[in-house]
Length: 144
Image (cartoon, rainbow, N blue to C red; front, side, top):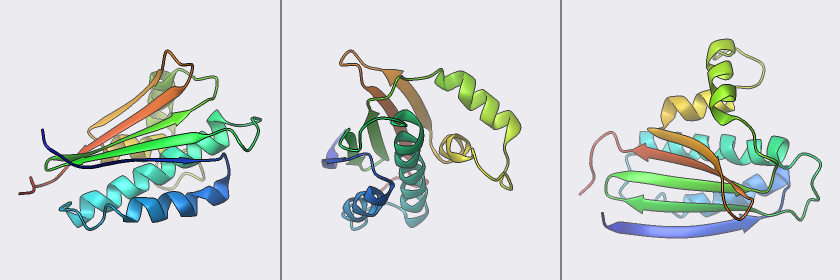
């Protein structure tokens, strides 16, 4: 698979840092990604980053880094968001959110949104004691 672009962004644990994350993500908009898929990936990125700040890093110092890697190919957009939180049972939480939330729910929709827009949504503890949220979205139509 040919990689069209790959980039990593690191920021502090701060909800205001989302603006910088989105500005960085805008750099990928010029690549041959269908608009609807790009918007869905942007939404998944917002939800993933926000969850890392609000939940994974709750109670951690603001300088605790969150790293994001985006890889673009002709067929998919792949993103990985690394946090330093204690981790959790992702599958159990996802199952719970799929059962208890809907489009009208006040909160707790982030995992549900990621699950609905992506082909792969995984969360695992890494050997370096970070957690990695992996999201992959295949394009609705392959790009040349």
